[in-house]
Length: 380
Image 1 (cartoon, rainbow, N blue to C red):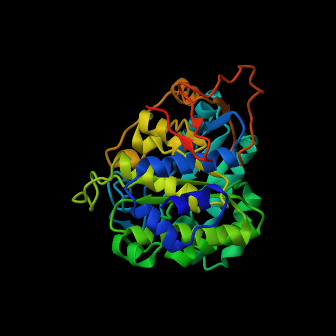
Image 2: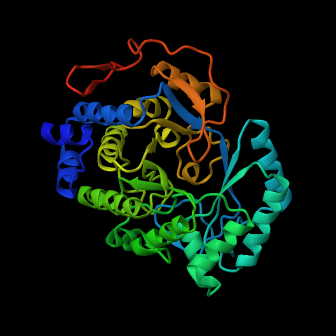
Image 3: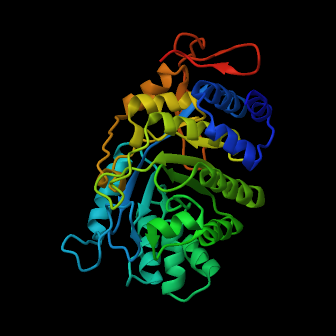
């Protein structure tokens, strides 16, 4: 395995077979050391980043049926909702007051809301809050708009962009293998459709993130196939700013019989993703599903970003996973890892003042090179 790790650390491109070999490995420390070395090569700056945003689920009504989702409701359910504008305004103003610059606006595949409704929503929010980026919808929602309104996908995305959509989240990817998607979802985008939404958005000049939810019915080879499809699209468009992965949270879902993947599997998969996705610049830690300490440890397993303060989160928490961090906890986690925390936007531009604090030497909390190009992990 060591030659493969050196290949990735030196900037080489792993083949799918080589990626699978690494994912089948049980040498977590070796994978972590290599992933950390790649991260330090891509991000030699003394900073690790975070952002402040809020995930507003404007509706929980969804025509798709996903076995892994505990959040969605049918339109006839008593607790189905579409949030009033006044509630949206309040949530956005609370986010701005906490220093946030972005709203992650996501719902479900609502069976009756037309494209004009979404355009009006975006125009209204952008007019009221011009400095707030609307990181809006998912590939599944966008594809649903395209089918429901019987309009070309490019026209749908162009109209949403003109109305104020600033960037496209990577949600709804799960595993980009149709066998898996058909096994756990109904009435939801398949692999080519998810990729086509992002491809078209990138062609319009937009940026997006990409994701992977793993630890359910997929095989290790299918995790690598997912990474390969993302890497191929990034080769084509260069439109992905970051990759985020997290483990499936089974509680309260139709897949509750599946044992939850733990921190070992999370760290291993993220490390391999960092080694494999050499053309995607940033990787976010998933402290929302893993908690503070594993989220912090992810900074030594390929992540250069602690993700969002996540003022509000409803989908993962509906599945029974509830981790909450304060802004100071996120900053301290970065400092304890030996870095200076910086706030960034979705485009990974720093939006806070240049810090005056000096970076302490990378020992004790930080990582030390071992003289062989790899990096040894601290004892946490």
